[in-house]
Length: 427
Image 1 (cartoon, rainbow, N blue to C red):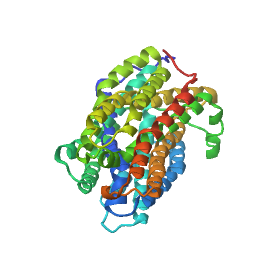
Image 2: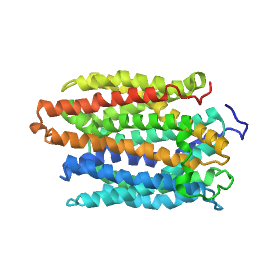
Image 3: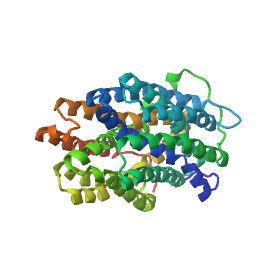
Image 4: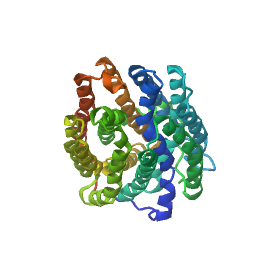
């Protein structure tokens, strides 16, 4: 499935495309790991309240992601289709991040909802065109994996940088929240500006204006799209649950909260080291098989986490290495496959709707992560789990361990089944 086209991007262009991934990663990790626990425990809003608020706030993305996808496809500006959206989205994202990560001590659920919705809207205006842009920088099947790999490598490196400070200095959650806001304020405008100035925004034919719902009316009959986005959604829940519960698991199950950030660094560093290997594997096995192998390895290595307890730190380090190793493939293969689905959709419909399809892709990325909070926190509230370790009994700890280690494996198995017969691939 190779299509004649321009030369591969240079290493410098790959670097500049990946740069905005650094602040996005610094934002995303605390957003899903630190923010829920900080608002629920440190600020006293409660696990059930925070879980419901964050889940409902994410429902806004069901509207904004597809809408921004359609509008960005229809944007025709001298700066291009994707650049104007990134320029407009960065200030809103910075504003939302500043509000969410620097709250007063007495804020309530309404403040959390407003700050989160503002950040989500700005983040969508940046992340969705940024991701769609990668599919348009090259028409080549394997070059797209290389481009997606540059973005995901930057995201993982940014994640490791975000974890390095608390891992080295042991700062508390309040300082992590402040540091995240300051980092986004500085890095987001700079890295996005560099990418906008150095990368092309390829021109594409104008898309005929039609009612928004008609932009999606044929998508569900597109079997590769249906299989891919379904599997990606389900696999996203498998990541959303442990991401949400990680700090609680490290503190209350392992009894080693001071090791939490070091463990995350080990996990993501394993992904970085293994990513070039997975890119080479995908050229031989194809993207679908590579993703299936990666999900299978992750599922096989993660379930023992449900059986661990206090003092089992070494075993959990081994789990972090095992499950971190396939992470690179799980991050890179699905969006690279989605770019191929864009080509199929264009061939079937006569227009290129990259942003439109990636709008739905954004929903399938964000809602599963929100479901992690929306599922886990209310369940923990029902079984009487508390941030105070002294009040948690064996049942609440067992539920926490099961939600963290067992339930994600079940979701991964479903995702593997959904993508098993995916037909659009090349080796």
